[in-house]
Length: 561
Image 1 (cartoon, one colour):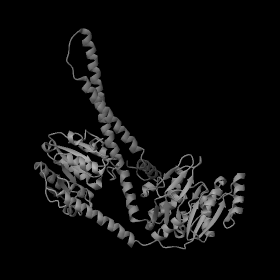
Image 2 (spheres, one colour):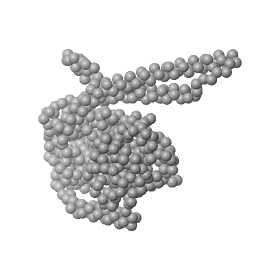
Image 3 (cartoon, one colour):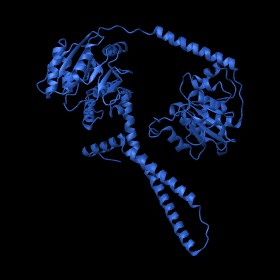
Image 4 (cartoon, helix red, strand yellow):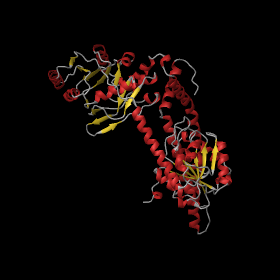
C-alpha cells in the first residue's frame, strides 16, 4: 500500500493527486492544538475574502487531539474545525501519517503553501523538515524558526507573520496566495544530507555529554520503614513478606500488623509468618483500628526516614526499595510513586499521568497501592483515621499537590498488586467528602498560587456553563422547530402525491429525496445538541454548580442562576 493510501481523511479524499485541480493547497503542518497556533490559523482563514477562500483547499496535516482552553475543552480539534470551517472553506484532515509519509505527501502536492504557526520558542523540527522542500512557507516569527531555516540555507518564498496575530497571518497568506504558484530554490541534496548528518552528530554528542556530566546516583543510608497492614488478607501475607526478604537495599525495618482479622486462616498465617521472619516486628490488634490509624501508629513506633505502607496484596521485586529510595534521595522528592502491575484474572500495567487539583478531586492520578513518603511529609499530613476510608494515599498526594511538594514518578512498575473480587479503583462519595475535609484543614497561605489560579478558573467555568447550555438549548429549539416544519411539509407532499396519483393527474414536486436528506441532517444536528447538553449537565462542573446554589440557599444568600 502506498503512503497516499494510509491516511485518515475526515472530510474528503486526501491523496495529493485528488486535490481539486484548480485549488491552491494550504497546509497546516503540526499537531492540531492551540499551542501549535491552530486557532490563529483558523481565524486567519476565516478572515480571507470569499474569492480567495474559493481558490484554496486547506489540508490539516497532524494528529487530532482534545483541546484544553476553557472555551474549547469540550471539543477535540476535529469537532472544532467542523464548527469553524464547515461551509466556509474546503478542507480535510490527515491525522495518522508518519513523518516521512507526511513529508512525501506534501512533496507530491503542486506548489503547496505550508503554514508553520507555533508561537512557542523552540528548535522546530517542522521547519527543519519543510525547509528542505520546494514549497512556499508562511512562518511564525518566533525564536527557532529563523535559525532553523537558515541552517538548511532556506531563503526563498518565506512569509513571516507575528506570532498569535491572525491579521498578520491573514496578510501573509493573502500575499502567498496571490503569488501562487512559486517554486523556491532549496539547497542541493548533497548539502542537505551533510547538514542532517552534522545535526545528528551534534545531537549524539550532546546526549553523550549530558550523560557524562550527569550527577551519579548517590549511595544513601537513609532508613526505610515498611508497614504491612493486613485485615482478612492472610492468603497473601507469606508471599508479600517473602518478597521483602529479597530486597537489595539493606537499611530497612519491617513492621507487620494484623488489624483484627477475624477469619481463622488469616490468624494462623499471621502467627506462622511471625515464626518465619523473627527479624520483623509483628503486632496484632485486639480491635480493628483501620488503615489510617494504623499508619499513624507505625509512624510513632518506627525510626525510618522514609515510609512504605501497603497491604499483603502487594509484592515487591528485589530492587523495589532500592529504586524507591534512590529516586527520592537523588531527586530530593517528598513522595515517590511508580507504575503498578496488576495481577489476578488479567495482567495489566497501570500508569499514572499526574494532574491538577480538579483532576485529583475526582480520582488518584499520581499513585497506586504503594508510595514512598518522607517522614516530613507524613508528620505534616497525617492519615485520616476514619475506618471507612481506605484512600489515605490519595488524600496525602492531593495535599502535596496543592502545597507544591515534590512528587517524583518512577515510570516502570516497582511492585505487583494482586487484584481480587474486593479490589476496586472506584472512589465513592464518602471518600470524596473526606478528601474535601482533609484539604480544608490546610491553611490558605500554604496553597500554591498555581492551585489558587486553577480553583478560580474552575469557578469561572461554573459561571460560564449556564450561558453555554442556554445557547445550546436555543439552537436545539430552533433545530426542532425547523425539523417539525420540514416533516410537516414532507407529510403534506406525500398526502398530495397520493391524492394526485389516484386522480391520474401528473404534478411536479420538490425533490423528495433532497428534502429527506435535509431532514436527516437537521435530526443529526438535533441529536448532537441534545448529547452536548446532557454531557455538560452531567459534568463535574455542573454538579458542583448545583451544590453551590444549594449551599447559598441554605445559608440565606441570594441565588442568581
